[in-house]
Length: 170
Image (cartoon, rainbow, N blue to C red; front, top):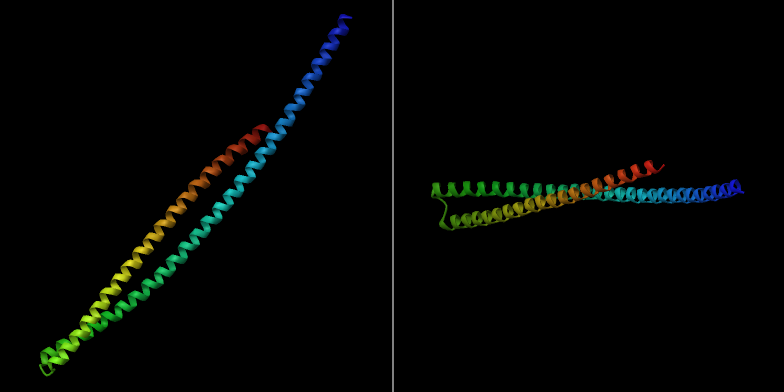
């Protein structure tokens, strides 16, 4: 009877341990599934961030290209106006030197020169504003890129930790 009691007690203890072992295995499987789900979520977030970073980079390149085109156009116009100013200045000098040109002609050339100079100043100002806007856009896109890089690094680190935990549980 004593052996039977010990056998029954050992059998009951064995069943309890088997039940606890089965619960632990189920919890391990659930934890592994949760980690896989978290890993998949992090990978999706990283893909989204990479896609956003690529889109931001494409936007930056497009803005840079537009700004470059606008700056080139304004530079060309500025060059044309400078040529016109030089031509008008040359005419004005010739008129003054020759003294054959009437006072009215000198006044007209001076008005054209003043007008061209004012247009030149306006174009120069617009060129400077365009360059400043280009620099600001580049700085804004650089900040966005830095934030995306930081987030990717954080998610990659968390993903690595989760992968280590999955490997450890397996």
